Length: 266
Image (cartoon, rainbow, N blue to C red; front, side, top):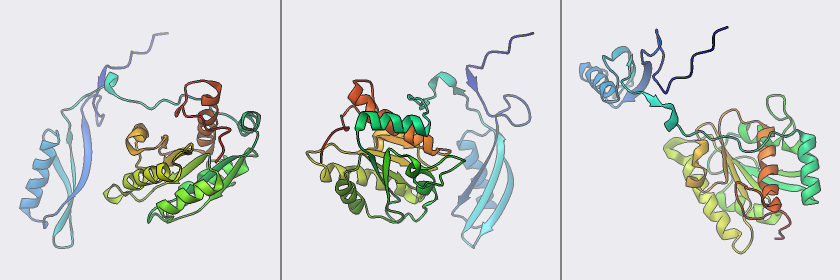
């Protein structure tokens, strides 16, 4: 039985044959659908690193915009040793393990306050994590005997969420953001982090955990969050992280945030 080939040191996209670099891109230009717009689209594709790009689709959007699809091989390769990957540093726990760990270490219910903030009205994500019906066959955090969950729903003002977190004695604040136009999800989270610092001045700030399809899990520190979850996150991911983060500091282990929270009083 032959050994499998070792993984390559660097990779290009795959289209028709291995390493051919073929990709398909779509974008809109603020130009009417005319020859100038098509030539501009191809030049843009070349500047983006496509060799011999092909214009495979062009459609006017109104009278002043044109939507394009281009196809061609990229010149770029990605060195695998240069890629940053957010590895999960804690084990996935069952609901029973979470409950036993938190009750044993905390001696009370862990308080989680969640919401969609700003103008975001998309509650599917936050409900999937918090509501007892859960997601992907997993029960949400309301199912856990060791947690008290306060779900504030959609379009919650940042200041209101911070104040409610204080009044509830929150150990963690969970935020889901689906609206991303003009990086609204990043702005909202940064504002919430700053507001939590103000409201919890002199006290231990709760964990700030955010999630949504457009978040990069490696950018937590950049936006003032303790943890960022992306696509495919399930309730047990979040429950296991909260258990890890809120008990590791007490145990003297490396935690996502070394500030002790368990046992603090508000």
